[in-house]
Length: 599
Ligand SMILES: [Zn+2]
Image 1 (cartoon, rainbow, N blue to C red):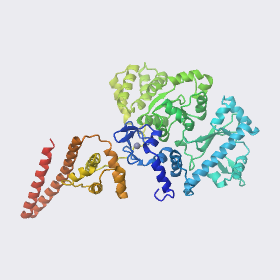
Image 2 (image 1 turned 90 degrees about the vertical axis):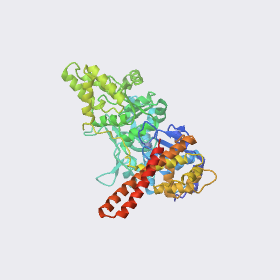
Image 3 (image 1 turned 180 degrees about the vertical axis):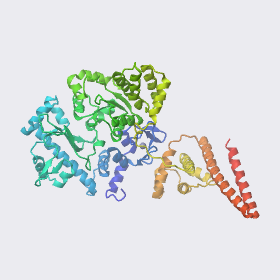
Image 4 (image 1 turned 180 degrees about the horizontal axis):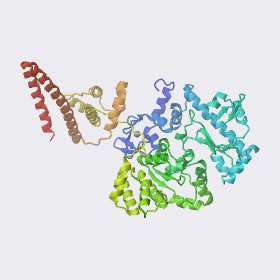
């Protein structure tokens, strides 16, 4: 970003917007003393470790380590490149950006592909809604009770069977054959040189990201199409911009409603999403499969922590589904299920046949663990020993891994009483599954926490304490009389406090530091804003920390000295031994003094 040609405009925008305000638009932030706290949108967490400093205009998550300024937040959160984040922020700040040609090759390609998809979608949509070639597809959709309005909202389309119609249209719009090929939607014919459309003869569902950019497509064959060996649905292949596991169909339309309703309904396919949406149930997305991915969960975590599953009847039928339920639970989601009571095979069918029933079931979603127990009870006879074993075998792999221990033990007790077994026995059975390899451990992205030496932690804590004072310069002057930091980077930051200014202003202090110290200082400062000490208790805490640091140093020296003494004794060097023993006793006295003042 340093060499960015628009640096002055970047600075102008930064001055006009406030990081707390911007982040507050995306997630809920709470004021806590001098900083703001939130649940981190980048990793699953139940207690907030995402910290924003209005003074430094930066954020940092102490859970996963993500950190940066307002632009890096928007880039990360919206999955956009720097230029796009800049454009968004310029709008908020009311700054008119100068045209900037300095996009990277990758950024340029991504933009072209999105534009190409946009054009293709327009063409497919035109064929479906206006052209005679689209008539069979339009009839098919209207027959499924999909209205014209809905077709428009979802930009549905139809790819006519003539292989060159779309490619000619795109060529005319200025796209090259190479671009068409990298969009994934088109291939070259083995005979001749023509470009064909992967989705020929299919109803087209544009796959947008939550910013409404079309990244790929999926296509469904018409029921009238009797050609053999055709998959009912196909998707764009993975491309530079289309990654199936990172998309949720409908999120672009549903996200506001998900926030409002504080819950999201998760269904499998496009029609399962579209039909309820058309009926006014708008907090709904499709995962396009039977299991959800970690990426999809993280995307949803920004809007809500309640999932209502409207998946096909055999909810936990696959290992992938099991794993994703386990991961969602571990990420802190509340999981519920819409119970279609085996009357309908999926939400689309239910909505079409009996919308009232669907809505009633939706307003009383069943907690997932109840649902799992109930389904097992329905398929096995709980009065026979064999039936009980089958129930346990079906249910325990899931109940055993419930992340909240209270919830877990409640459900195990409930299960025991339902099948008339002793709770201890069920609890013991459950333990077998906890560590068994039957289900892999949750795949939640957990940042690997590096082992930090204790000295580091103590010294960082000490510096944070100093910066939490109203007058850190004064405090530093006192401390330096009897203390020196062991860790070089902390001593360096500290040394800048020894060149006092009139008042301490965090942003100004930060600007005086050399670049290699700036992230060190940011971490310290963000920590410091979390303390709410009065000056007396701060001083006590400072002294305690200094003493802890000194004890570590003293104990280290004592260790080294005793090794040296042993060596000198072996060599028969009595003078040296005597000298070393004096040092040893001296340090020992210091150490015991510290330990006696500890209280
Ligand atoms: Zn985080």
